[in-house]
Length: 372
Image (tube, rainbow, N blue to C red; front, side):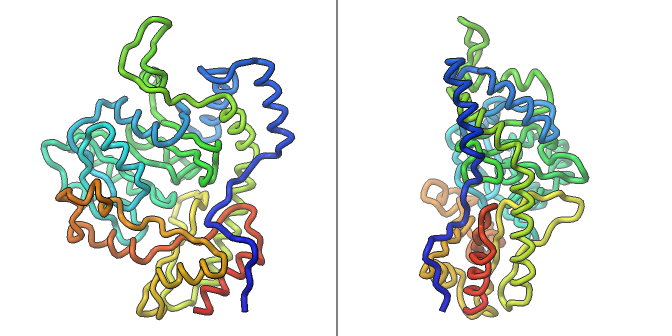
């Protein structure tokens, strides 16, 4: 019988060496600058932009505030078409801006927003599309850009899962009008909490920077009703250290992913996603999808069985955002409108993946899935 004494969670944050962080903290204590675009903040934005291969980036205290500010920066109103298969922050950012979310179904291969379903959902009130690069797999970038251009819509990508992902050698963050990252502790790259908006011109970055700092454009000039979403110096210093180690951590995640794929490949009723062609992945998640008829156990039964053995997967993303009380009254939330998303949400479970996951721990997880 498999015995796992120490809990194995779906993720565990990658932390930089404490002694290196302490040295940066000493500098902060010496500078006595904790926030308001301090030296570490400036350095972090520059080095992060260089690493990601983008021109303009504005870092935030968390990804949700970055999403909310992105909508303000582009003056989005009315209706925005988005996915129900994501974390709730995607849609909450619309609601907080008094924007009506319109849910469209996802495509059945990588579970991103389906461009054909998006085009069918456009109305005179539609002002933007907000797709999500689910599990870090890029959306159909060309199709969405064509729709946005044809109908005069803004295109905002929730790229919370897509740190470092490239398509044909180009950062996935260079597409659309804006892209938003999350640096939450659960992500491939974390600043404890944190986030960013990526834009493509200096004027837009300036507006974003004003909005995240109460709208101040000078000591006594406020140009818009902004909020306080600035990243502080401690987060920025921590982020600078994380950049030194992120490539090594991604390599470890890739090794874990490859072992899962090898060992789970021939289990009836268990499916997983393979790498997309021409994409450099960063292995944010390892979702598997349970066909109850073939596996002879439902996703929830597997989920509970793993929990009994101290393995805590997560059902990302279940239930659908459209099923939460705030949103289920919307016409676009009807299950018939979201048949693919409904099916996938009922089958998915994300298995533990993080750089320090030990091979024997992963072997135990795999054996539990095989044993049924």
